[in-house]
Image 1 (tube, rainbow, N blue to C red):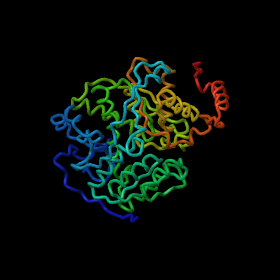
Image 2: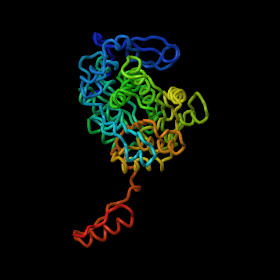
Image 3: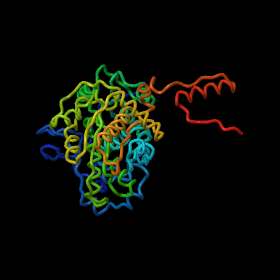
Image 4: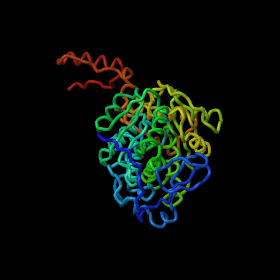
Length: 437
């Protein structure tokens, strides 16, 4: 594979494009829609700006429903100029009415937004990468890259392969085997770095400046992060064009959390849903919980930590959007909570046993925090609550090995089966009684 050093070129914007440029979230400075992500005046993050007046005039519920069965039904709300975005079927994942889990927890209206079955690589990162690589192609990049805890590497490699882009991804060297294999299969260059995610990300910033590649979560970050808004759009549409009362989502960098909030606000702004308060609660692992710690300490800043948790996909010790996640949780009367590794494993098992959904450690963290909030009386049983499951458990099998039992291995004889059945009933693993015919 040839990894080209290239400088992007600005292409002509489509008349259908609704984004107008970038703006600093801190000082408000305006920028062209190029491959930049940090304000040159105050070093604040840059965010995409849209023409909401045009969106209000042109977008309707009907026009969205007439679109593709993917995130690109919301193309007008995404920062792409192309009339031919990279569409690999990403999005429109199930919103599952979680009746059995709700009964277990004492809730009435609980839903699971299940991105564990997202296309093509079974995590929500397929959303952000589809947007980022479409924009990368528009800007003239031929080589794309990322710093990743696993899921983003999977998505970047897969969608780059589909789009015919060269790809080099950077990961911590201690990632789960499923995530490493799930990247290598697409044929990218994979660089495993001795260090945690924050160290990998710092290295990638240097590489981006040196080689001129399109890093989806560095120089393309303003466009990349907008893909997460589709998780808000889809929930609103799937609930019959109304917003939930409460959402619970995992927190890593904090970007997903802030963009779901932005998605809800945009739908309100253009008149697609009625305005209502939505409480935002975030979930972190205790072994990497800088945002939860700041929330508990009533701080308005984040103190970086060194990650030490099985929840590697959300193990970001210095979260770029942490302060914005804090602000949203507080102003919406939400919460930010953390759970330990054993509670994460229990959360994975609880979701699997009640709803048949096998999630990775980030999802186990979110379910465990949901349970913790319910037990603390911080979720009203009558609220319509949506829990975001962002990745598939097949990617992090190591986390639950040794905690879920073993098969009962028998000889191919009826009496051997009967003994095994008796053993299973003794262990409480099978609630079944034989019927005499």
